[in-house]
Image 1: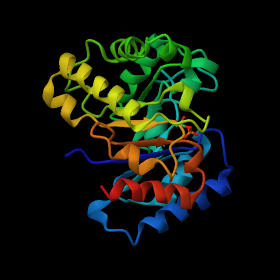
Image 2 (image 1 turned 120 degrees about the horizontal axis):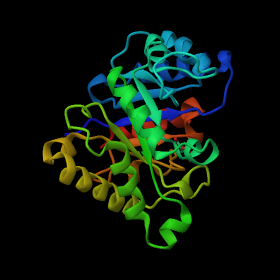
Image 3 (image 1 turned 30 degrees about the vertical axis):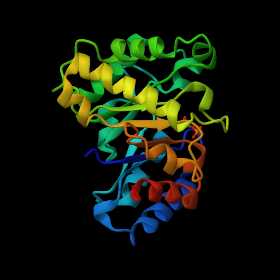
Length: 257
Ligand code: 13P
């Protein structure tokens, strides 16, 4: 059985002090819960706070940190960029790649997303690759085609062995920050399609162990229903991860299953 993952993408929110408080509240909230039932919990603060949040969590099997982005270059004269080696040196284990905000607001291309995925994997960081269709693409019934293209351009030609740390986050763009989440049926339908696509390209074993998360207006009220779907292995949470009690409720929703 695949272990559930609940990841909080804090985006460009919270200062240093607030990040440490939030991380500590979440860490403390997990303590009384049965360890063997906990999902993998991941916190993704902004770059300047990754080290402090990692330190706050300490060495803990159940909770770890992720960057929200990385440079596609390994090192050198790239002012303002942050490399995977820098990220790894903070204690982070994951990197979110290809988030729709980066694709649309920072014009990230499929080519740069693929490069980022490669540098992450080479640095032994686990990429959380975000994919998902826009509202008009779903209306035009092109959502499967769009998602398939995102998968193929990022992971095509890469072997299952190289991709062994990959995590997928299906985040329909129309559900991000809108309060309108995908219905469990819509999430399940797409995530089964994603798993099926990987089964065809990378084999059954790879596809059966691949974690596929759902993201987009996931909250304590809908998490359990979404996480109960066969191909939904947890969530990538934005707004509701900024509040310890909401985020802990979502983590608990991943445990009751
Ligand atoms: P919301 O949960 O705020 O909709 O954001 C989802 C998201 O973008 C996580 O990466």
